[in-house]
Length: 89
Image (cartoon, rainbow, N blue to C red; front, side, top):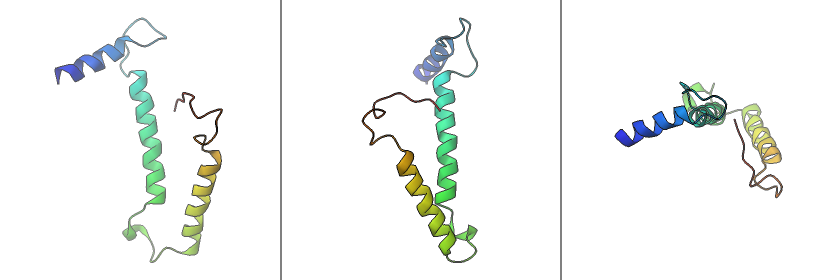
């Protein structure tokens, strides 16, 4: 636990914009933003059966297919120019 506390304390002092410590380190903010985005996507694509009005209708299935197709279209992991670039949330 001491190592984790030390790491988080060090991160508050390593912010590049200001010299004073910050309350929410940038790596934590980025991880939090990615987690929120992933949670939203998961909720849309993998709703529990109790939230369905019955069996999934064609609109829901089509919506998921469209989302996945668009995700693949805009995904840059298969693009050689952007594959190894750093991203921020």
